[in-house]
Length: 277
Ligand SMILES: C[S@@+](CC[C@H](N)C(=O)[O-])C[C@H]1O[C@@H](n2cnc3c(N)ncnc32)[C@H](O)[C@@H]1O
Image (cartoon, rainbow, N blue to C red; front, side):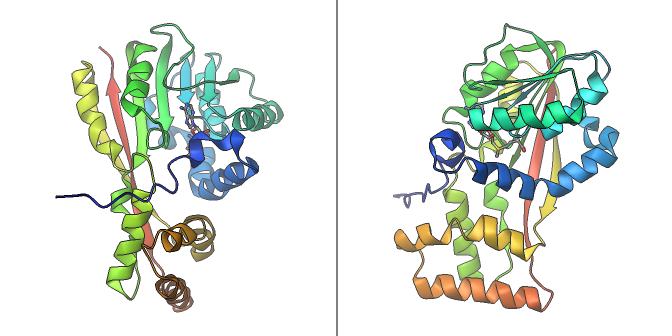
C-alpha cells in the first residue's frame, strides 16, 4: 500500500525561525497561543508545575524555551537554583533575555543551543523539559537521549507535545473538516511522536513513567482562523489537496458556526514525565 505524501508545510517553520523574513511572527504566535496557559501558571504556579515537583535550589533546563516566560515562572520556585533556557533561534533567545531582565528574575539564563547536541555536561540538571519541541526536531530520539544525558540521578524529564492526529474541527461537512485536520497534522514533521515517549523512557531505564493529558479547546475563532487556518489553506490548495471552493466553504462554514455560537476545535496536549533512578 502506498502512503499519500505528507503535506509537510509546517515541517521547517520552527527550525528556521532566524532564516525567515519575520522571526517576530513566531514570537507573536507564541504570545497568542500561550495566553491561557501563562495566565494559569502566573496565578497558580504550584498547580501548573505540579508534575515537576519543583523545589528551591533545583537546577532546570528548558529545551526549546521560546520566549522563556514559563521558565521565568519556574525559576521563582527553584531560586537560587539556576534555570537555563536553550533555543535554536537567536531571535527567541534575545526575546527571552529581554523579557527576563525586565521581570526581575535573576537565577535564569538563556543560550542558543540545539537540543540534539546539548552543550552541558552529563547529569547537570535536576529537571529537564521540552514543551512543544520534539514534534519539530529532525531527530527527536537523539534529542530525547541528549535530554536524558544531562539529567542528574533522581532527576526528572518532562516532554509535552500535542498529538496532532487528535485535532478536531467542527465543520458542517464532516469530510472537509476531517481533510483539513489530517492535512494540518501531516504538515508537521513529527505530528504523533508523543506516542513514542513512554517507550523511549522505559528503554532508557527511567521509572515512574506517567502520561498527563490536557485537553485544549480552541474556542476563539479569530485565533484559529489567523494562526491555524490562514497559514495552512494556501498550501493545501497549491498542493491540490483541497480546491479553492472547498477552502472557501470551510472558512465560511466555520465563520457561520462561530456566529451561531457553535465553533469548536480542540486537541490534546500530553505531558510524559519520568524519573531517572
Ligand atoms: C513551538 S515553540 C515552543 C516554545 C516553548 N517551549 C513554548 O511552549 O512556548 C518551539 C521552539 O523550539 C525551538 N527549536 C526548534 N528546533 C530546536 C532545536 N533543534 N533545539 C532547540 N530549540 C529548537 C524553536 O526556536 C521554538 O522556539
